[in-house]
Image (tube, rainbow, N blue to C red; front, side, top):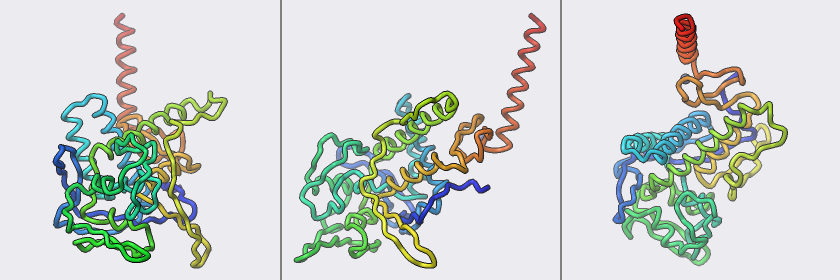
Length: 311
Ligand SMILES: [Zn+2]
């Protein structure tokens, strides 16, 4: 059996990543992560790398939790490094789209912000210009311009990056621009949530034999407000799912990964890394970890019997 998450239907969402990113503070000292000026973009489908993306993101989540617990500088530097690696591999999360009920944002006067957001917003609505500025703090007025036509609007970008010409919401043109950025802290908070969710799940999974009723793990965590789909025909008929952000794609992959009947997303009992197990009996990510753990166990047993003999 393959160590792959079974994604039924056809999950597709083109996402963009740039070849290089960097950290930069805005004028108020908020730390953002942004594509480097000379970076080039490429497109990929997150669902083709479902296993890697979920494991890499849970690692970011673990590191974030450690930092929020200890607040140590060393842990902070480590998360920064992990997030940079993650973003280089998969791009930014698309939180500008994932955090509102609005489809488009661009061209709307106000945005309606979802309750459980990771962008530190308590208010329910926000002026959309101010909202967009939150994600484009380093763009000059010439970099991104809205152009209004009689029946439509367009986003004019002073760069060469993908445009969807109405095939996807206009906000995607913005997300896929080099001027789009996200704060490190937003990414950390979302990753922390996922890692917390997974840790709770493992606790319940370990005691699954004793559960008599369904337990909801962290209720109200996932709200897929804007997942759309189309039905496509090629050699067979398939559902093609559309996602508003990489964030929603990650949540969806996670949900499929932890409910899959053939594989188990797990945490190695020796090194604590995430990996995909084929059954509940598999406790380690690799033969190396299994051997090391066995050596440790037998050492422990030996020293215990020696102590007993001495005592
Ligand atoms: Zn291991």
